[in-house]
Length: 326
Image (tube, rainbow, N blue to C red; front, top):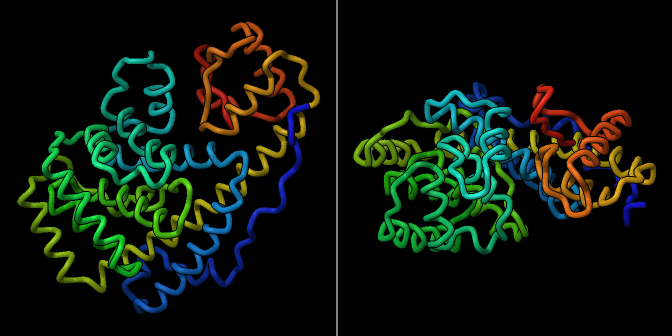
């Protein structure tokens, strides 16, 4: 039996009032900043409770949110890749080969969830993320950005932290997609999470058209600063909606993980425990995954058995090069 294969406690239940209090994108303008801030604080508080549980499936949860962020931001960059294409770009690319523009963007969002929070805003990590997001590496700009983010994270309130992340990204010509990444990283650091959760990157409203110049980006940042209240409300509303979606996804994946762990005692294949841990820690794995102690044929049989037991899903829809996940 898989060690510790127990059913988890119930996921945090969201009260009806909170779902009603979080405004939709079109309703933000009609509400006051204070009301939106209260709803956003409650939503983040509920999300914090999920994060701090550090569930065994937290890795799969983070990767699934990273995939959602990558799918949206890839479209904002003018690309056509959907979730399935993004999975293929990363999982079917040989180690050391280029995953392509969309695949690199997915890896950039995965980096947000995979690296310890304290390492996210270092010069080395930010330089790597910028390259994955398609920007030319500029060590001087990255160094200035790190200093600016350190001040934003240390002195600003929650609203100032969010707006400061976007303003810093756009001031250096890196755009709102990178601003979303920075804001999520700053939030995780402020709340003391071990790993960040992609939130603002999953909101289509914060994209920019591809190819915008640094001058245009700076002008847009200035416009945002002028309309501070409207921009703050939009950010807080988007963050609150994203938090609720993340909590809902955690509940869904928690149920699927419980099912997977419940059938673990029925598995007789060698290295089955390793496969289960991989499924709990990632968005998906390929049927040809190199797993010590298990042949390709044995792995395919194991996945067939897990499908039969309703413990995993086949995510590609193909008869070959199949991909499995919770």
